[in-house]
Image 1 (cartoon, rainbow, N blue to C red):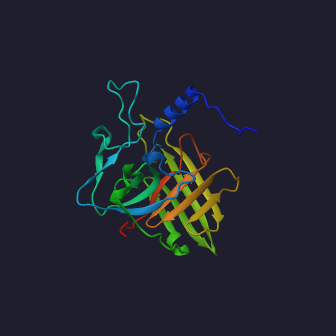
Image 2 (cartoon, helix red, strand yellow):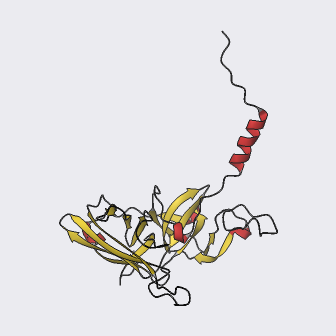
Image 3 (tube, rainbow, N blue to C red):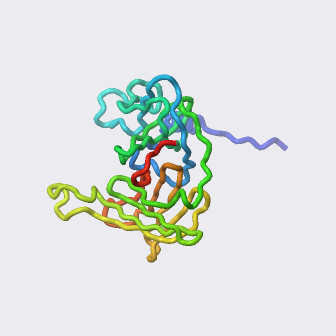
Length: 242
């Protein structure tokens, strides 16, 4: 009996090669930095000079761009952002893509934070902190949005409020006032993670604690149009030094 063989048409091979070569990096933006299924960590920027953020594959408008869009992230100068980091900066690390890491830098003044790709060899990963119940407690803020966590036995009780576009928008921009959303719930943390659901089981918010940062992700059912709890929070009135 002849051995079983499979014939793959040359056109199919060409299509596979084209698809692989056209692989694009995942989005790396501050507004969508916190995602489900991503293992987050902390790192410090190393090296002796400033480190520019590198754009993802979606910053270039292929319809409006006259010259061909660069392949980003890469060493192409066109991919380099004006924003930069300096050695010693503390960042949150997310997805990895071909030697680059999606990171976010957040401080007290810039509540949205700055996100982008950087070369992985410029990052020194930090060991994961041991999280206790005390580390969760307090009010966490991201601009006008806030999440407050209180102890309830071995569990945590959460209450939060979020706005769009802000708590006090210009009447010209939003004549009817801001859109608002709320979250609440009681749950037990599992190490550095916890998930809350309100009494109606509609608004679900998942939190990841990476001291001094609190990462939040909701199910887009927590309030008015465009209102999201998604993002990176800092404890109110606390420094982020580590």
